[in-house]
Length: 162
Length: 286
Ligand SMILES: Cc1cc2nc3c(=O)[nH]c(=O)nc-3n(C[C@H](O)[C@H](O)[C@H](O)COP(=O)(O)OP(=O)(O)OC[C@H]3O[C@@H](n4cnc5c(N)ncnc54)[C@H](O)[C@@H]3O)c2cc1C
Ligand code: FES
Ligand code: FES
Image 1 (cartoon, rainbow over the protein chains, first blue to last red):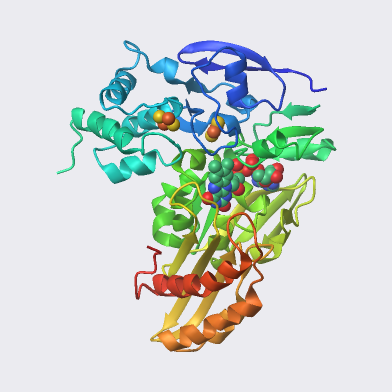
Image 2 (cartoon, helix red, strand yellow):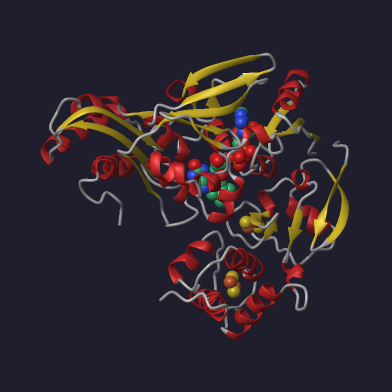
């Protein structure tokens, strides 16, 4: 039997310490501690719904070892709420208004990928947006409305290509 | 019952010391293969040794004629490096077609070659750039050509107390990498190819061709290389030379494609990559 270890990091701005078995994934550590905003889909790195930001970079939490995020700054969709994260709020509003959500299962991962794209200075360019969300699968929307939403956010931020 | 321990190590020396001491060490870099192995119960009873926090293992260095990358340099680091894009285009093309942007933040070059998948994209590109792998254990260091590094599917020359610390390769302005996947992103190669070509006038002075996913390991295509050396690069010459692939590759059926299909596409991919490497025609698969 494994001996549990403790992992301390910042989750959506708050310091947390969780106790886990050494082989636990970041996804399981988060969900075992009631952070159900992070979804589990395939649990093998393919679907992207479990995507979170680790020190500003998107990572699939199901294939990230929890122990390796010691000291990291982690953001999930809960950290993008109105009032705390303006960009995160714009993205979520655009998803709602563009009809980018059907069953909603891919949405948390899509929003995190979009957040990284916009934070990194992403422009209103459909091809670049498609690439940015290429690690995320959606079985409902056909992707067009998701791309529309991210395009709109970039446009609203004045990042149109002329 | 899963049974693991975890060892933090914040420097190369600390990692090598841990490997010398532990009997059950299993190093983890990005974890994109390791985590799946744990989830699929392919490994157990191991101490996971973290490679990610040893800063000296990550980075890209220009040595003039060659480039050295640290083992935990991520695929994303390669993708965003102007040096790689300009001086080792084949490796850059392997990086931008690797998985997806999110997975590229985690996946490392050292992990890609040490995992020794026949489909490892960076291995194919590195092989035509004459890559040499630096392998270290506590108190010792050796260098192995990438062509001698792989021993079979998932097998390398690495001993249990050794890790890859760096990879050094030659710069090239005449190289290309092409990947054939089943979709544009997040696809493991059905087959991949890299070519590095030096011409003198119209004549091939030096050529290196490597393929992945068509044999138990990524490998050089010596027959095709031999057939092109000293020849004028013309359609007919290339068409004749790629027949040598029959001897160079031994593809099998798997979940992504049949061996027969791989045999059929291999000559096409090699031909395109040769043209792409010398910039004659657009070699990119459409
Ligand atoms: C969704 C998805 C898509 C993928 N797409 C691709 C793709 O397009 N192309 C491709 O080639 N691969 C792909 N892979 C496979 C994988 O991402 C790569 O092989 C990756 O480069 C592994 O690096 P890592 O740092 O994550 O390795 P890890 O999982 O940390 O380690 C892999 C193996 O190497 C060992 N190891 C790691 N670093 C070292 C070192 N420095 N010295 C010695 N041993 C070491 C580990 O012990 C382990 O056995 C994909 C995987 C996933 C989940
Ligand atoms: S649950 Fe992590 S990628 Fe699908
Ligand atoms: S909305 Fe259903 S998977 Fe994307």
